[in-house]
Length: 123
Image (tube, rainbow, N blue to C red; front, side, top):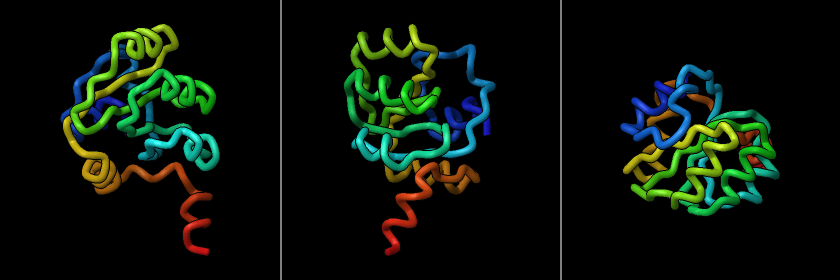
């Protein structure tokens, strides 16, 4: 799925990375805990979060992810957006709550990036 499709499905506003909307995304992860992202995310997909700090962008960079969706209508501070833009990260913003945003992407065929977490929860 292209980032442009993610933006369309989520009725999202593109805050940075408009030139990267044709990049492919194969998975998604919804989390407000960057420690979970670092521990469990194995695919370089899109991160959906309501967390509003620069650590979100730093986490994406460490994980070789290139797209974040800020949910619940939250608007990131200018410093976050600038840091993302400087580092080539696509930033989207949607009014949808995280649960609905993740559900829409899943229904559209996007897989989840947290394979080990799903297995760990079953045990």
